[in-house]
Every structure is written in C-alpha cells, then in structure tokens.
Amino acid sequence: MHKIDVSIVYATRERQWLFETTVARGTSALELFEMSGFADQVSDLQIANPQELDFGVYADKIEADYLLEQGDRVEIYRPLLADPKEVRRQLALVGKTMGKS
Image 1 (cartoon, helix red, strand yellow):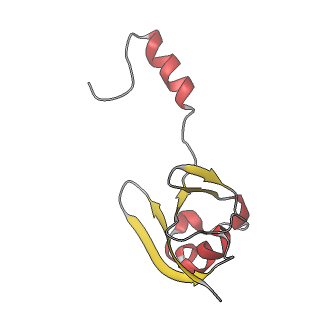
Image 2 (image 1 turned 180 degrees about the vertical axis):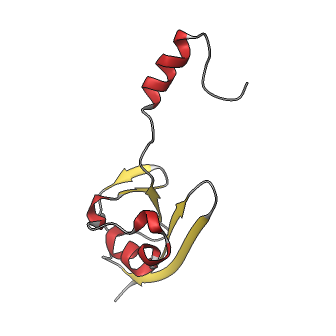
C-alpha cells in the first residue's frame, strides 16, 4: 500500500494545533481529522457530527470525503462570527474600511 505524508491544522487566536503523519493513499480529510485527536484536545471541535466541519487544503475548500494527496495540509476552518460583506457595508456607512488604520 502506498503511503503519503500529510498534515492537519487548526488555529484559534490563542493557539495552533498541528498533526503531521504518514497515511495510506485513499485516506479522507475526515479520517485524518479523526486520527489527529483534535476532537479530544480542542473543545471547539467536540461536536456530534464531524462531517459538519469545514475543511480546506491550502485555502481551497474541500469536502470531508476528499481523498488526500502527498503533501496536503488540511485546514479546519472556524465558523465566521460575522459576514465580511455585512461588516464592510456597515463600516462604509460610517466612512471606514476593514484592515489596519
């Protein structure tokens, strides 16, 4: 069976988690998440259905059943607290923009 090197990451404002491993070709993003142990380590990820998590590989959104490729870095995305379009609209109303001042 062919093995590939992959990693999975999750970050909050306070901390980052990284899990690097070698898996069999044909392993899915969800299976890698389950192997990582992040659900046991990170309270935000202790959810009833991990299929509902949002994943990406190098900032491209993927599905939980995405089959990993050599060198993939799976990212677990946090839910947005506010819609960026709405935030920009509200800032524009008061003459401000997003970003550093």
